[in-house]
Amino acid sequence: MLSLLDDSEVVAPQLIASDETGEWAGRPANLMTHLPGAGDLDPVDVEVWIDQLAQQLALIHAQSRHPSQERIPTWMDVDDPDRRSWLAGLPYGDEVLALATTATAPSREVFSHGDYQHFNLLWMQGQLTGVVDWAMSGVADAGRDAGHCALNLAVLHDAERAWRFLERYQAITGSMLAPSWLICELLDFSDAWPRFIPLQVDGRMAVDRVGMRGRVEELIVKVLRSAG
Image 1 (tube, rainbow, N blue to C red):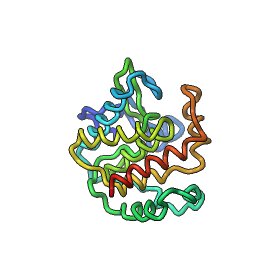
Image 2 (image 1 turned 30 degrees about the horizontal axis):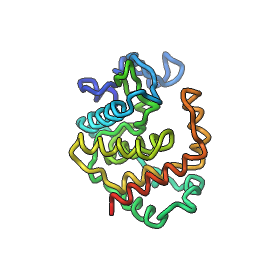
Image 3 (image 1 turned 60 degrees about the vertical axis):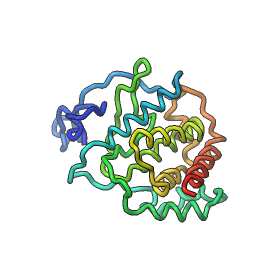
Image 4 (image 1 turned 60 degrees about the horizontal axis):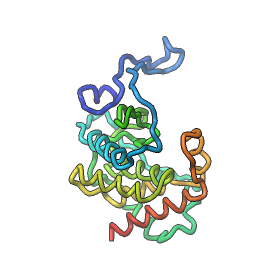
C-alpha cells in the first residue's frame, strides 16, 4: 500500500525495504522513512485542524486503486455478540440496524486507509505532516474511513466536531457520504472504548469516559436525520 502512494501528495511514509520472512529483523518487518511531527489531539485552531483532516482524507480517497488491494471488512462482517451488546437501548435502534445492514456494496469505492483518525496523524506547527499506520488499508466505501474518523472525534471530543468534519469532507469532494456506511462505522463503538481510549490518549488531554456513549448516540441521530 505504501508503494502505491510513492508518487502521490499523501503525506505517508515511503517504503525503503521489506523483510517479509524476518530473515534480517527476526520477524516480518518494514523499513520506511521517518515523518516529522507529533500527535495533536487538542488543537488550538479546531477549524483548521478539521479542515486538514478532511483535506487529507479526500486526497487519500482520490488515489488510484490497484487490483492487489483487498476489500476492508466492517464490524458487520464479524459475528461478535460482545461488540453488539452496547446496542441495547440505542435511540432508534431498529432504524439504525436496518440502515447499517444496507451497507453491502460500496456506493463510492475508494482507496481506503482503513484506520483514519486523529491518533494516526502527525502535526508540526499546526500543519498535518504525516498519516501513519497503513496496515489495514485497502478498498472500501468512502463512508468507512469518514465514519471511523467521525466516531473517534465524537468519542474524544463531541458530536458537533465530528459532524463538521463530515460536512467539510463532503464539501471538498463534492460527493455525499452514504448514511448506511457512516452508521455501520459508528456502530463499531462498544463498551470497550471507555477503557482503551484513555490508554491511547496517555495523559495528553482530559478524557470524558462517562459521556462517550451519549456523544456517539448524538452523532448517530444526526446521521439518521440527514438520511431522512
